[in-house]
Image (tube, rainbow, N blue to C red; front, top):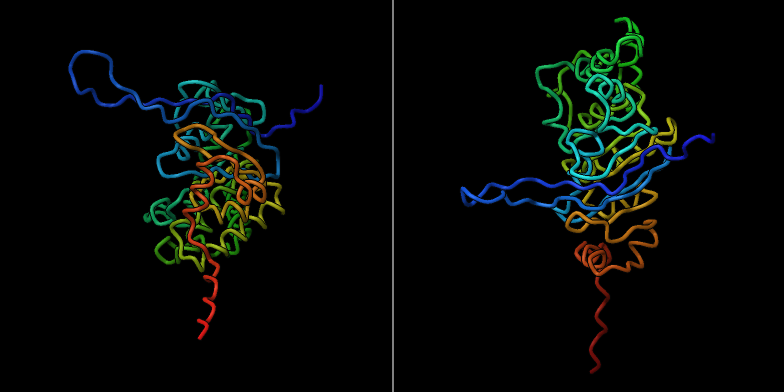
Length: 283
């Protein structure tokens, strides 16, 4: 049998949330956050998901990360249906998919050293299914942490420091190192540069692209910033009210959009081009 070509498969994914009742009797109203979302992602590729706030982007990220359960559909990573795994099996499987969160200031525990924060996924990995994965010795664990820090342009000695000793861009590098430490196949990046200064965003994005080339990573890149997605992604999905309304490669989708919603998103982006010069008045 041929090897499965897909790293990640998402099929007919849906998510409903119960809303507070306005009356004592009758069913609770529900919010349909996602409906009928399907896509695939191969190794070494980047898939961007764009849309306005509230369109379902972060819900999709949480479902792919198995942080929430879907109301419909399934998510398969390397052929495993993540939402059908037992607790210990899912914990072991998380070595293959990690997440980079939006805010580097809140995603790192200020009480932990950088080495402790970066090494946390290794601790979770070692608590997976007994006998399925060999526990690392303390020396091996520190070597892996040092390699992850080195991969993002920091030093192994930085592991002894605390998050407050680093800038925002450096903290996001630490968050990326934490995602890399288990050597995953997939990284889900939920608005990974939106909390950073514009001058730092390019550095982090360039780092993520370099790591992708070096390590063969795949990214699911959640963002409201079309320019960022245009820069780093091979394919783009446009979400509106929890549904995919358009998909395609960035060059085509952002320059020749077919759906009115995509056109509205593009029109809302401030133009970086100067306005045309006003011709001088004729006397």
